[in-house]
Amino acid sequence: MHTAIYILHSAILLFAAPTEPSISLHLDRLPEEEKVYLAGLDSELKRLIGEQTWAGSRPGFPFAVQIDLFFDKFSRNAILRRYEAGILIGLKSGVQFRDRRWEFPFAQEERLPWSDPYHPLTGLVEYYLALACGTEMDRYRPLGGEPYYERARMIAQAARFEALYALGWEERRRLAEKFSDSLWVTLRKAAYHFESGRRFLAVDNIEDAVPHLAEAVHLAMSTAPENLELKYGDHVIRFVDRQKVVDALTALEMWDELDEFEEWAKESEE
Image (cartoon, rainbow, N blue to C red; front, side, top):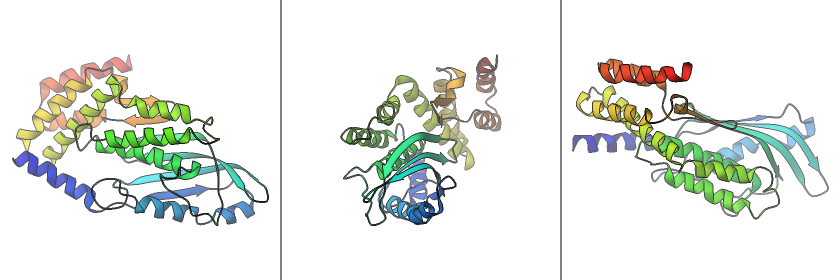
């Protein structure tokens, strides 16, 4: 009962105050006129992201996130401006999604849609935010990220019906599906148990912390050491921080688990 109350309390604290995303537009490669034209896009994206319900019942993205948009090229005619850009989304947990191949139209007078109908600009931002949210939710509920990975898969499906699908969306679809692979599922489970153990440890609840950390180590060690920080193309998904595992096991004097874990971890350094 105490465990359930504590986990519920943690979830309430997590979703009580959504964090405004930090968005930076990198426009150095564009002429001055285009910089002026794009002014305010960051504020518009913040508004759109903040209006969505990502987790819990309140609107707003529940985790601190940095979004960088790197504009490389542009083209325009009498009615349309089109941009080529890259995106980098990073979380404090060490999760990082980078995409260098992105092209989208943008018009100042257009009110950007979100989710429906699909738009090449907001669709890709939502896709990566869904993946980012999924990796974090996995830490708070067993496989809690699944609805968010499914959200990303649905966006990739919607992108199939627009002209720019060939610019990377097949690979993005495969990335979203990867989270259901057995290796990634194992690491997602390990992340949940590890974070649960750390939260119990933070309030000196040793009785509940120990089994969670022991299970996290067991799950992690059923993979290869280098898999704790999965790299997929330009993406880095750190499910479990190796040094934090060592610190938690040391704090709890779980010497047998610590010895096994450190010996296993050496395999990736040889």
